[in-house]
Length: 422
Ligand code: ADP
Image (cartoon, rainbow, N blue to C red):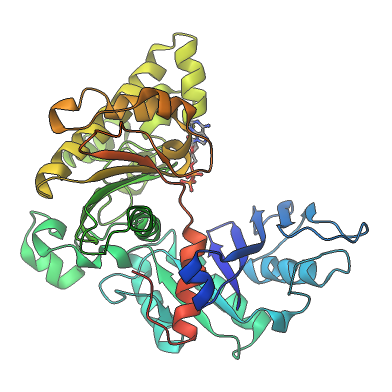
């Protein structure tokens, strides 16, 4: 079944077309047929970059397409994807017209307490998403636009599925997700920890299980999704026990531009000192803090490492804080879980940054973690790799994440009434 996976941000649209079905899921040989990214949706110079991943023997076909053009909204953006599919020069195996797309899966950020699993999208689901907009004002409106754009382009006969970043964390016990504030704020306004990156953490747990031949019940790992945003999840018996992001993605680790954990009275203090509104201060915590705020250089760990090589003390400090906080959370989760079998690194920094992995894992022999510095250095990009010594009681892995694959599989399972892969 050909699934179009859509990930709509406020000004972007990412897509993949993935061919999957029960056999492919069982054998882990789902096929990525095409993928693309549109940035700056809503501007005069939106940037489109599409690629079909299955090469053709036809010399006139091209599998790479890059242009810049004005795009008013997500419907226009999605129409560009469809136009590209229809171009005679585009070769995507098994996909030459709209009806070759059998279902659509949407990455949806906030499912609140309502959506504990992926769901078939209907009017009621859209209403519930609209209801949740106040919980995710930056993300859910874009996801809703994506659903409406897909309905406008594909009509109502192509099924659409919503897959929620928060769903995997719906198993957190109440003592882990509650904040220490008056209880009625939870009952009246649903203020609690929700957690994010759930699809990625679920994928990591699934791959770990597949590599180790373990059951869901036997899956006790700490999953480190370290990208521009970052979160750590304690996965006990295959379920999310706790995670570092909270009511919003602002809580927890130091991130590219987000502060992570902070004493909330600092907000009032900054407001008074800098004569700023609460919205402005929250915006600073989301967009101008973290690695960018500390280093003053960049939110990108590659630039920080260049800065460190040049002896930039604030770049050094940014990496110190970043690694220290990850290590601190690992320690607290090992205690919360009564021990862990593995620590798994994923996402941009987790998959690529040798130094961060080394710094996070070093000097933990007292916990039974024997890091293999050489395996870490030799880790090949895109490959699942063990980076602890064979004798290490706690194993350390690099597992490249694949959220799109989970979106495609969930979409297939919902549309064909198969049980969802845990
Ligand atoms: P997002 O969180 O936006 O989905 P990614 O998971 O792709 O992003 O992570 C992006 C981040 O990964 C970049 O901001 C950068 O800090 C980091 N990164 C990417 N490649 C490398 C690399 N080779 N070395 C260190 N960090 C990297």
